[in-house]
Image (cartoon, rainbow, N blue to C red; front, top):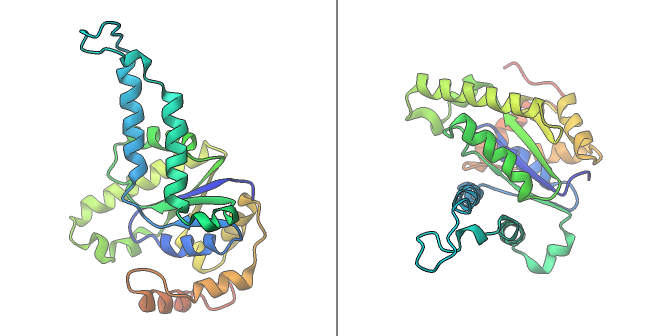
Length: 239
């Protein structure tokens, strides 16, 4: 494995739980599910810390007393340890984990510069980080109940813009890889390329087994759908 951590960057109903399961099939890899994007709070805290330390208050009577002594290096050391401990959680088996991370969907409503800043911050929390940008055909995404209660034109516009930001960021950073849900279920060359990017062997039989396993909020339905999409020859069914 070329990386010490992996984050799946995506949006709701992109098939990311399936990709999460496939990555977890890699020996030593532990990719957790969603966590309400708790690392974004650490990003905001870090930004506030940098802002606060620009004020110098040497006297106890000063409103910014000691703010210049706030140390971002200390913050990052403890934040890295906190994130790792929270994600691995199983202390008894922690020694088996050589690569850890999670998938998260709560990016689409962040302002572009905020999202770019956050993506640039994440490598400071995670060791030797790989970002996997997972996307899906937007027509299929929009059919999901996840987006059904939102104005469809607005949602499609937001997702199209999110796709653009994902693609532009991934194309300019060597630690990023882009993949589509359609590539995953068809076991296309793009999926094989993801394993090469990560530096691990592609075990087709293992991936095929994962495609047949239940995932999602309705595991049985999702499992059947994935099997219908994949016909065992690497092609997506047309029916």
